[in-house]
Image (tube, rainbow, N blue to C red; front, side, top):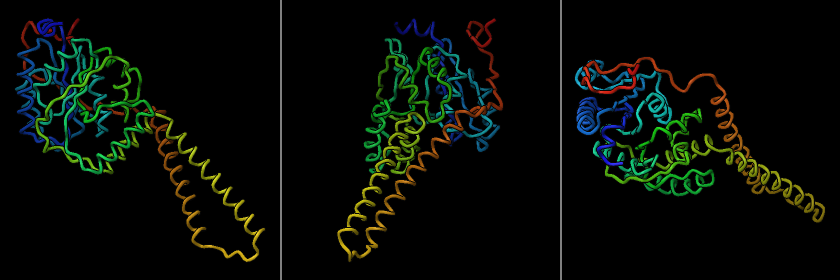
Length: 327
Protein backbone atom coordinates (compact mmCIF):
# COMPACT_ATOMS: atom_id res chain seq x y z
CA UNK A 1 0.00 0.00 0.00
CA UNK A 2 1.58 3.30 -1.07
CA UNK A 3 1.29 6.65 0.68
CA UNK A 4 -1.43 7.94 -1.70
CA UNK A 5 -3.65 4.97 -0.92
CA UNK A 6 -3.19 5.58 2.80
CA UNK A 7 -4.16 9.26 2.50
CA UNK A 8 -7.38 8.58 0.57
CA UNK A 9 -8.70 5.43 2.20
CA UNK A 10 -7.45 5.35 5.78
CA UNK A 11 -9.32 6.94 8.67
CA UNK A 12 -6.71 7.83 11.31
CA UNK A 13 -7.52 8.22 15.01
CA UNK A 14 -4.97 9.78 17.37
CA UNK A 15 -5.55 9.30 21.11
CA UNK A 16 -4.06 11.65 23.70
CA UNK A 17 -4.35 11.18 27.47
CA UNK A 18 -4.74 14.46 29.37
CA UNK A 19 -2.69 14.02 32.53
CA UNK A 20 -0.51 16.66 34.27
CA UNK A 21 -0.05 18.66 31.09
CA UNK A 22 1.02 22.30 30.81
CA UNK A 23 -1.94 24.00 29.10
CA UNK A 24 0.02 26.38 26.87
CA UNK A 25 2.28 23.72 25.41
CA UNK A 26 -0.65 21.30 25.08
CA UNK A 27 -2.59 23.77 22.95
CA UNK A 28 0.44 24.34 20.73
CA UNK A 29 0.93 20.57 20.42
CA UNK A 30 -2.71 20.13 19.35
CA UNK A 31 -2.48 22.87 16.70
CA UNK A 32 0.65 21.32 15.27
CA UNK A 33 -0.94 17.86 15.35
CA UNK A 34 -4.11 19.02 13.59
CA UNK A 35 -2.10 20.81 10.88
CA UNK A 36 0.14 17.76 10.42
CA UNK A 37 -2.82 15.39 10.01
CA UNK A 38 -4.73 17.79 7.77
CA UNK A 39 -1.84 17.97 5.32
CA UNK A 40 -1.51 14.19 5.06
CA UNK A 41 -4.84 12.49 5.69
CA UNK A 42 -8.31 13.32 4.45
CA UNK A 43 -10.11 11.56 7.30
CA UNK A 44 -8.89 11.74 10.89
CA UNK A 45 -9.90 12.51 14.46
CA UNK A 46 -8.05 13.59 17.60
CA UNK A 47 -9.45 11.99 20.75
CA UNK A 48 -8.56 13.58 24.09
CA UNK A 49 -9.24 11.46 27.16
CA UNK A 50 -9.70 13.85 30.07
CA UNK A 51 -9.40 12.05 33.42
CA UNK A 52 -11.58 14.53 35.29
CA UNK A 53 -8.80 17.10 35.10
CA UNK A 54 -10.06 19.97 37.29
CA UNK A 55 -6.71 21.76 36.94
CA UNK A 56 -7.25 22.26 33.19
CA UNK A 57 -8.86 25.69 32.62
CA UNK A 58 -12.31 25.56 31.03
CA UNK A 59 -11.50 28.66 28.96
CA UNK A 60 -8.50 26.90 27.36
CA UNK A 61 -10.62 23.86 26.60
CA UNK A 62 -13.34 25.99 24.99
CA UNK A 63 -10.75 27.84 22.92
CA UNK A 64 -9.29 24.53 21.69
CA UNK A 65 -12.73 23.29 20.60
CA UNK A 66 -13.43 26.61 18.83
CA UNK A 67 -10.10 26.93 16.99
CA UNK A 68 -8.95 23.36 16.27
CA UNK A 69 -11.04 21.02 14.14
CA UNK A 70 -11.54 17.24 14.43
CA UNK A 71 -11.28 17.20 18.24
CA UNK A 72 -13.34 14.78 20.34
CA UNK A 73 -12.93 15.71 24.01
CA UNK A 74 -14.06 12.78 26.17
CA UNK A 75 -14.29 13.56 29.89
CA UNK A 76 -14.24 10.65 32.34
CA UNK A 77 -16.15 10.77 35.62
CA UNK A 78 -13.09 9.96 37.73
CA UNK A 79 -9.33 9.41 37.31
CA UNK A 80 -8.41 5.90 36.15
CA UNK A 81 -5.26 3.87 35.52
CA UNK A 82 -3.37 4.51 32.28
CA UNK A 83 -4.45 1.11 30.88
CA UNK A 84 -8.12 1.97 31.44
CA UNK A 85 -7.73 5.46 29.93
CA UNK A 86 -6.12 3.99 26.81
CA UNK A 87 -8.87 1.37 26.69
CA UNK A 88 -11.48 4.14 26.81
CA UNK A 89 -9.68 5.80 23.92
CA UNK A 90 -9.56 2.80 21.59
CA UNK A 91 -13.12 1.80 22.53
CA UNK A 92 -14.40 5.17 21.33
CA UNK A 93 -12.06 5.54 18.34
CA UNK A 94 -13.56 4.97 14.89
CA UNK A 95 -10.38 4.99 12.79
CA UNK A 96 -8.97 2.20 10.63
CA UNK A 97 -5.66 2.92 12.33
CA UNK A 98 -5.37 4.17 15.91
CA UNK A 99 -2.26 5.85 17.31
CA UNK A 100 -1.54 6.35 21.00
CA UNK A 101 0.65 9.36 21.74
CA UNK A 102 1.70 11.32 24.83
CA UNK A 103 1.29 15.10 24.37
CA UNK A 104 4.50 17.14 24.64
CA UNK A 105 6.54 13.93 24.96
CA UNK A 106 6.20 12.05 21.68
CA UNK A 107 7.02 13.84 18.40
CA UNK A 108 4.15 14.27 15.95
CA UNK A 109 6.35 13.41 12.96
CA UNK A 110 6.43 9.71 13.92
CA UNK A 111 2.76 9.31 12.90
CA UNK A 112 3.40 9.07 9.16
CA UNK A 113 6.32 6.65 9.60
CA UNK A 114 4.33 4.37 11.92
CA UNK A 115 1.38 4.34 9.51
CA UNK A 116 3.74 3.48 6.65
CA UNK A 117 5.05 0.54 8.69
CA UNK A 118 1.46 -0.54 9.35
CA UNK A 119 0.74 -0.47 5.60
CA UNK A 120 3.42 -3.15 5.13
CA UNK A 121 1.27 -5.68 6.96
CA UNK A 122 1.97 -4.98 10.63
CA UNK A 123 -1.07 -4.71 12.90
CA UNK A 124 0.86 -3.55 15.98
CA UNK A 125 3.66 -0.97 15.86
CA UNK A 126 5.48 -0.50 19.20
CA UNK A 127 7.29 2.74 20.00
CA UNK A 128 10.85 2.34 21.35
CA UNK A 129 12.70 5.24 23.00
CA UNK A 130 15.18 5.84 25.82
CA UNK A 131 13.73 7.46 28.96
CA UNK A 132 15.14 8.47 32.37
CA UNK A 133 15.57 5.48 34.69
CA UNK A 134 17.39 5.01 37.96
CA UNK A 135 19.91 2.20 38.33
CA UNK A 136 17.56 0.46 40.78
CA UNK A 137 14.78 0.46 38.20
CA UNK A 138 17.06 -0.98 35.51
CA UNK A 139 18.05 -3.85 37.81
CA UNK A 140 14.43 -4.50 38.83
CA UNK A 141 13.29 -4.35 35.20
CA UNK A 142 15.93 -6.85 34.07
CA UNK A 143 14.89 -9.33 36.76
CA UNK A 144 11.16 -8.77 36.24
CA UNK A 145 11.46 -9.30 32.48
CA UNK A 146 12.60 -12.86 33.13
CA UNK A 147 9.57 -13.42 35.36
CA UNK A 148 7.22 -11.76 32.86
CA UNK A 149 8.50 -14.02 30.08
CA UNK A 150 7.22 -16.97 32.12
CA UNK A 151 3.66 -15.63 31.76
CA UNK A 152 4.17 -15.06 28.01
CA UNK A 153 4.54 -11.31 28.33
CA UNK A 154 7.19 -10.21 25.87
CA UNK A 155 7.75 -6.49 25.55
CA UNK A 156 10.80 -4.93 23.89
CA UNK A 157 13.40 -3.09 25.93
CA UNK A 158 12.71 0.67 26.24
CA UNK A 159 9.15 0.26 24.93
CA UNK A 160 6.98 3.36 25.42
CA UNK A 161 3.15 3.58 25.56
CA UNK A 162 3.20 4.70 21.92
CA UNK A 163 1.35 2.27 19.66
CA UNK A 164 -0.11 2.16 16.17
CA UNK A 165 -2.93 -0.40 16.04
CA UNK A 166 -4.96 -1.74 13.14
CA UNK A 167 -8.73 -2.05 13.38
CA UNK A 168 -8.64 -5.84 13.63
CA UNK A 169 -6.06 -5.65 16.44
CA UNK A 170 -8.31 -3.21 18.32
CA UNK A 171 -11.36 -5.41 17.86
CA UNK A 172 -9.42 -8.38 19.24
CA UNK A 173 -8.27 -6.37 22.28
CA UNK A 174 -11.77 -5.10 23.05
CA UNK A 175 -13.26 -8.59 22.86
CA UNK A 176 -11.07 -9.67 25.79
CA UNK A 177 -13.01 -7.45 28.21
CA UNK A 178 -11.36 -5.89 31.27
CA UNK A 179 -8.26 -3.83 30.44
CA UNK A 180 -7.25 -2.76 33.95
CA UNK A 181 -3.48 -3.36 34.25
CA UNK A 182 -3.80 -5.53 31.15
CA UNK A 183 -3.87 -3.20 28.14
CA UNK A 184 -0.28 -3.59 26.93
CA UNK A 185 -0.09 -7.33 27.53
CA UNK A 186 -3.32 -7.79 25.57
CA UNK A 187 -1.87 -5.68 22.77
CA UNK A 188 1.23 -7.90 22.82
CA UNK A 189 -0.87 -11.08 22.78
CA UNK A 190 -3.15 -10.30 19.82
CA UNK A 191 -1.12 -12.74 17.74
CA UNK A 192 -0.99 -10.34 14.80
CA UNK A 193 2.27 -9.21 13.14
CA UNK A 194 4.08 -6.53 15.12
CA UNK A 195 7.15 -4.38 14.63
CA UNK A 196 9.26 -2.07 16.77
CA UNK A 197 9.70 1.57 15.79
CA UNK A 198 12.65 3.51 17.24
CA UNK A 199 12.37 7.25 17.76
CA UNK A 200 13.69 10.12 19.89
CA UNK A 201 11.49 11.62 22.59
CA UNK A 202 10.37 15.19 22.04
CA UNK A 203 10.87 16.12 25.68
CA UNK A 204 12.50 13.79 28.21
CA UNK A 205 12.54 16.37 31.00
CA UNK A 206 8.79 16.10 31.72
CA UNK A 207 9.10 12.38 32.42
CA UNK A 208 9.69 11.27 35.98
CA UNK A 209 12.58 8.91 36.55
CA UNK A 210 11.36 5.41 37.19
CA UNK A 211 12.60 4.04 40.50
CA UNK A 212 13.16 0.59 41.99
CA UNK A 213 9.79 0.70 43.80
CA UNK A 214 7.91 1.68 40.65
CA UNK A 215 9.60 -1.16 38.77
CA UNK A 216 8.61 -3.72 41.43
CA UNK A 217 5.04 -2.36 41.63
CA UNK A 218 4.62 -2.43 37.85
CA UNK A 219 5.95 -5.99 37.59
CA UNK A 220 3.69 -7.20 40.41
CA UNK A 221 0.61 -5.71 38.77
CA UNK A 222 1.46 -7.20 35.38
CA UNK A 223 2.02 -10.67 36.83
CA UNK A 224 -0.99 -10.73 39.14
CA UNK A 225 -3.51 -9.23 36.70
CA UNK A 226 -2.43 -11.34 33.74
CA UNK A 227 -1.58 -14.82 35.01
CA UNK A 228 -2.29 -17.37 37.73
CA UNK A 229 1.31 -18.57 37.72
CA UNK A 230 2.36 -16.33 40.65
CA UNK A 231 -0.44 -17.93 42.67
CA UNK A 232 1.06 -21.33 41.91
CA UNK A 233 4.50 -20.04 42.89
CA UNK A 234 3.33 -18.88 46.32
CA UNK A 235 1.45 -22.15 46.75
CA UNK A 236 4.73 -23.95 46.12
CA UNK A 237 6.43 -21.57 48.56
CA UNK A 238 3.81 -22.45 51.17
CA UNK A 239 4.40 -26.16 50.62
CA UNK A 240 8.16 -25.71 50.97
CA UNK A 241 7.62 -23.72 54.18
CA UNK A 242 5.41 -26.47 55.57
CA UNK A 243 7.98 -29.13 54.67
CA UNK A 244 10.71 -27.06 56.33
CA UNK A 245 8.62 -26.81 59.51
CA UNK A 246 8.02 -30.57 59.45
CA UNK A 247 11.72 -31.32 58.96
CA UNK A 248 12.64 -28.95 61.79
CA UNK A 249 10.07 -30.61 64.08
CA UNK A 250 11.44 -34.09 63.30
CA UNK A 251 14.98 -32.83 63.83
CA UNK A 252 14.02 -31.40 67.27
CA UNK A 253 12.44 -34.70 68.34
CA UNK A 254 15.45 -36.72 67.19
CA UNK A 255 17.91 -34.42 68.97
CA UNK A 256 15.87 -34.58 72.18
CA UNK A 257 15.85 -38.41 72.01
CA UNK A 258 19.61 -38.67 71.37
CA UNK A 259 20.72 -35.95 73.81
CA UNK A 260 19.34 -35.31 77.26
CA UNK A 261 21.06 -31.98 77.85
CA UNK A 262 19.77 -30.03 74.89
CA UNK A 263 19.82 -26.29 75.46
CA UNK A 264 16.99 -24.46 73.79
CA UNK A 265 18.36 -22.02 71.25
CA UNK A 266 16.63 -18.72 70.97
CA UNK A 267 18.50 -17.80 67.78
CA UNK A 268 17.36 -20.80 65.77
CA UNK A 269 13.81 -20.54 67.08
CA UNK A 270 13.45 -16.86 66.31
CA UNK A 271 15.08 -17.26 62.89
CA UNK A 272 12.84 -20.15 61.90
CA UNK A 273 9.69 -18.46 63.22
CA UNK A 274 10.55 -15.27 61.34
CA UNK A 275 11.17 -17.28 58.17
CA UNK A 276 7.79 -18.99 58.39
CA UNK A 277 5.99 -15.73 59.12
CA UNK A 278 7.71 -14.15 56.12
CA UNK A 279 6.42 -16.94 53.87
CA UNK A 280 2.95 -16.64 55.42
CA UNK A 281 2.74 -12.89 54.81
CA UNK A 282 4.00 -13.24 51.23
CA UNK A 283 1.26 -15.80 50.58
CA UNK A 284 -1.37 -13.57 52.21
CA UNK A 285 -0.21 -10.58 50.13
CA UNK A 286 -0.57 -12.51 46.88
CA UNK A 287 -3.93 -13.95 47.94
CA UNK A 288 -5.13 -10.46 48.78
CA UNK A 289 -4.15 -9.19 45.32
CA UNK A 290 -5.90 -12.11 43.61
CA UNK A 291 -9.05 -11.60 45.68
CA UNK A 292 -9.01 -7.93 44.63
CA UNK A 293 -8.57 -9.06 41.03
CA UNK A 294 -11.55 -11.44 41.27
CA UNK A 295 -13.75 -8.78 42.85
CA UNK A 296 -12.74 -6.29 40.17
CA UNK A 297 -13.40 -8.65 37.27
CA UNK A 298 -16.73 -9.91 38.65
CA UNK A 299 -18.00 -6.45 39.51
CA UNK A 300 -20.78 -5.03 37.34
CA UNK A 301 -19.20 -1.59 37.57
CA UNK A 302 -17.37 -0.42 34.46
CA UNK A 303 -13.73 0.58 34.70
CA UNK A 304 -14.67 4.06 33.51
CA UNK A 305 -17.70 6.24 32.88
CA UNK A 306 -17.94 9.09 30.38
CA UNK A 307 -19.40 12.18 32.01
CA UNK A 308 -19.30 14.34 28.89
CA UNK A 309 -18.17 14.35 25.26
CA UNK A 310 -17.62 17.50 23.26
CA UNK A 311 -16.47 18.03 19.69
CA UNK A 312 -14.89 20.87 17.75
CA UNK A 313 -17.32 23.57 16.68
CA UNK A 314 -15.37 24.35 13.50
CA UNK A 315 -17.17 23.20 10.37
CA UNK A 316 -15.33 20.60 8.35
CA UNK A 317 -14.79 20.75 4.60
CA UNK A 318 -17.81 19.74 2.54
CA UNK A 319 -16.03 16.73 1.03
CA UNK A 320 -14.71 15.53 4.37
CA UNK A 321 -15.96 12.04 5.24
CA UNK A 322 -16.87 11.31 8.85
CA UNK A 323 -18.30 7.89 9.67
CA UNK A 324 -19.83 9.25 12.88
CA UNK A 325 -22.42 11.06 10.77
CA UNK A 326 -22.79 8.51 8.00
CA UNK A 327 -26.44 7.67 7.38
